[in-house]
Length: 305
Image 1: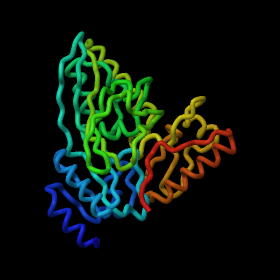
Image 2: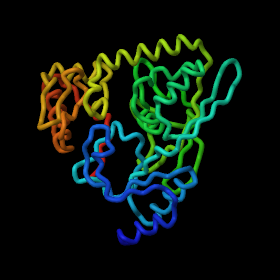
Image 3: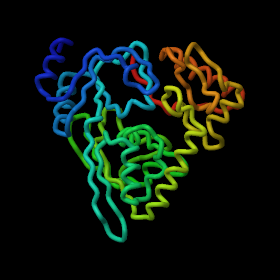
Image 4: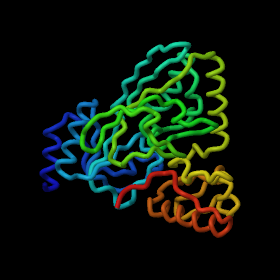
């Protein structure tokens, strides 16, 4: 199918918001990236299913995206469709036995909203997510974690849309969570999840959230655009310390700079290109290996040509 043909057909088949030839830099949290053929934003689950089935039929490459954090799109952009799940925001609380509460949320719900809900409802389990800027779908995809907690610790089930267009519920025990990763194909779409939380003391939950947010503000360069932590932490030592040991804090290529505040952040000082950020990532990996013997693996997702 021609490019003109599939663009017309996808508009005909869905009520989703579709933006063609959009610049990724307008959406990614780090502010870089070239042209995306199409950003498709389904309004509900049924819309999403129809979109995925069509893209499969038309053999159009596609990937789901969350809140555009922890994502770097190359300067040449992405040929295909990126599925933005920001419109999938349904939430529901169900009481369980002995103070347990099931929180059912769709993938587009922001972690900040879930944390705020847990404060209002005096629910413990979400505190470690305080200050993480992503959505639930993205957090599940990368098994987000901080301050001793990971999303896998509170997951009961995950609702998935397989590449062929079939929906299934996967229980926690049937999913392979590893450090900063959930083992799924790139085209599998996370629709939502059921999280298992517990009733607690509201002041204690609120206090823990405030403590974590204050620590983040003190350690992270929140005053500049970034994609969050660039590298996964090796078991023995945090990546930021290795980067510091390699003498790279503050090092820059163009407007891409290793944060002077936290070595595992690359910040955009104004007009950085994806090429500069990717060159800086490669340089860090090389220098850290030469200096410390550790091989750093990226935590951010890099897509595009």
